[in-house]
Length: 152
Image 1 (tube, helix red, strand yellow):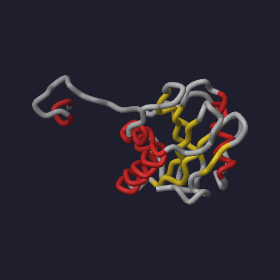
Image 2 (tube, one colour):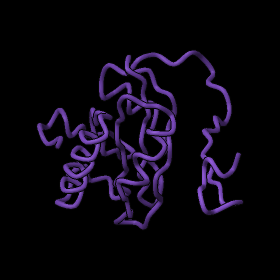
Image 3 (cartoon, one colour):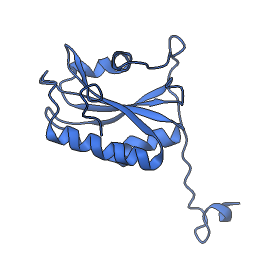
């Protein structure tokens, strides 16, 4: 049987599994607004280092889960499309919302934030997993790149 999966490499088989940790307190509702998404990721808002997360959603925009992609430094977080979309593909997500915090409290997107968002939108388009928004959050508020006209 292993020969079917790894021709020429018996014993070298890779298996990927989706593991759901914990149970939601109540049935998740569809995300309709950036504020709905912010409520799911607000815990990262007060972190002392940058956290980059992805909200995985089904075709009706009901959250399937939230995945922490990266925890960086005070001013930066290393993010690669592979790590953003791997959980989305595994969970059969139809769409995602990206989010990260700015520990400084300044919600202004950096040039790197905008370039990364554009790149992730391109990858999402290729994979047919829509990037609906990218939120930048702080302890006081949040900014939606979609509402600002800066998505993709």
